[in-house]
Image (tube, rainbow, N blue to C red; front, side):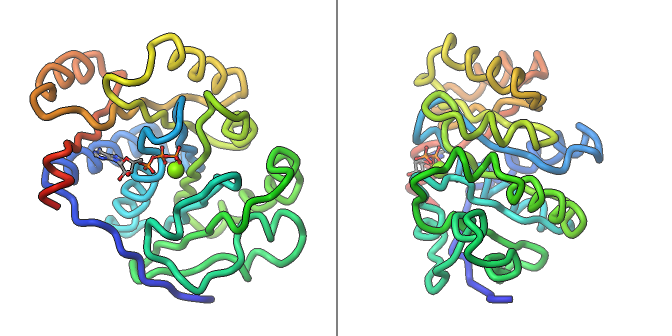
Length: 237
Ligand SMILES: Nc1ncnc2c1ncn2[C@@H]1O[C@H](COP(=O)(O)OP(=O)(O)OP(=O)(O)O)[C@@H](O)[C@H]1O
Ligand SMILES: [Mg+2]
């Protein structure tokens, strides 16, 4: 198996705490919740950031995890994580061009494997609906404790709903102050209609001055989890 070094940006204390909270809440959802998809309403809300942080945090507690980049329309995962020299990915496997073992790579983080998206495919929906995809998740379940799937935004393309049918649960990332309530509600409904249970919502990019307000409002209701990282954190990282 190929091995790559991930370059993951250093996180602030507050961000690490928020990710740990997310991981803990995922664990409390039950040990049958192992195939987890991450989606959002619109692009750029932080799905990839949350997926990577969550997978890293799971590996950190000694559980095995594979991060699947299922954004086969427009993926930035490889460049975001500084991965070079990996040519093949999910789209190659799903189109029958190679076997799974050829596309999974190990990383410098113990117990953290990754499956990159591979090149853009002309027929993503068809590929994700294929038996190869469901079979892949089944075999991954025998190997890994957790399978974290980074999906495209469900408010834009249907892929996350297709993946939702095969997942144990979904995490929705919502950018604070950006996503409209009605759209978030629609996406949540779409996920539930696909058969995915929405485990929680990560409220991302919360401005520091608003943290307390959000924390009180959302944490109190226990419906939402925060993943707090401000622009200041990003600058100081
Ligand atoms: N909490 C945060 N604070 C500040 N910047 C953030 C935060 N989370 C993500 N970002 C930044 O926002 C941008 C979009 O993040 P990311 O790529 O994770 O979103 P995405 O939902 O996966 O996007 P896409 O829909 O294009 O796949 C990136 O530049 C990322 O560094
Ligand atoms: Mg992304």
